[in-house]
Length: 476
Image (tube, rainbow, N blue to C red):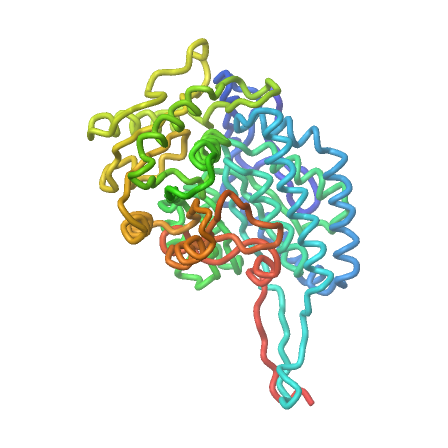
């Protein structure tokens, strides 16, 4: 059992003030393999004081010096690639190949892109040539960063790196059920030589450390990625201090497959939802298929799901791993059973565990057809390898079904008609749209509409989230 009870505060690994152990479970075998501590308000106060004191100096460190430190961090990250990959695989169940090619690589790409953005970013500029007004971007201050378990390093780098780049200091709270990649990241920060107190880490759960961070009077901003339910609680906790709250929350993405789509559109849509064991907030969990190709689409989707392998995360190869926890597993199985009870047709998978995998939180790739948008499986975020297929008559009906949700994170459209694709993309009420399987480039903004959150992560937009804007009149 690995002892990972310490927190990283003011440049040192320190013991928690009060003992409060939590075991970290490997989702592939349900075995505890590490012990962490859950922090208390006293631990949070120490970390906040450290970040508050270091802000006075870090704010004045030159851009050139910040870039130098970030470039050193990137180099160290690359050297520790295999350690990061192994850690993510163990803690959240990503198969090793996927953990490396998708999870670890995402963190590297974000650090690299933010370095380039920082080099080009103008923190001061004249309003216009005819004005004596001057605009200055200044760091917002001390930030509380709360990250999820499904893309741990991805979300850590999307928050920590821009905050560091613009001169903020911070306290990171990674997910308590997948905390070790965050602790490894703290080691990289330390090795890179960032000043003590600029970056701090306190483990804990949402009800404890999460609440303490979001309500703390000396924290100027909270950036949270997680469930919509938790995002609402954080917003309420932060309200009394009027701090900035940036939220990246849940989703229920729709994927419209028109009759003129690419021949592999259905199969690629199934692969997309099943990757990461369905645990991605912008996954296309509702596939809307034009009725003229509905029967063929069902056959292809079921065939693709039935061909997918499910296995433990420590194996290399092209398979999907377990979901993160018993709680998550139970939620997914409950929703699969609700789909059956509400009359959707099950054509692949189901509530039973895959053969030979009785131990571990494994879920079969599951496909429902003849789904209506009022069923639970079409309305609720399942966060597992479950796809709902819904037929539609025409474009207007399809768009109406996709937008008939409280979420608005990522939606998808498949058609070889460029004008139709662009027209539909404009009609979607979501922060992201993916046409014919194309993915977002590094540095593009990521975030949602409505109950999928507010604010944007990535690129210049990601830097601006951590900045205040000051207007100085009479500069010249």
